[in-house]
Length: 133
Image (cartoon, rainbow, N blue to C red):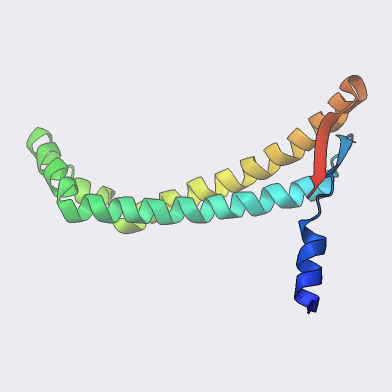
């Protein structure tokens, strides 16, 4: 007796040739590229702030900040490095770096899309191959 599962297995075992399609990428939508680069920059900004926090915590916990502060106090007693390099100052610097990365990353993504759209007029676009399995 043949069951439905056997019939389906027999059908799926037959080889079909994979169809290949070659397409040219001739246009990147400016606003889509802008939105995508903004989201990527937001993710990078979050990673930047978290990494600054983790690195500061590791350096602070191991006592490197205290040792460097003692070294600076030996050279010039009026400078207290632990007040200058505290967690609020490090996180403020991380926020400034993250905001600058956010702006620059978004602008670079938009500029890259615009440059690609201009270069396509000369080169004809990027040839991309797709296949169906």
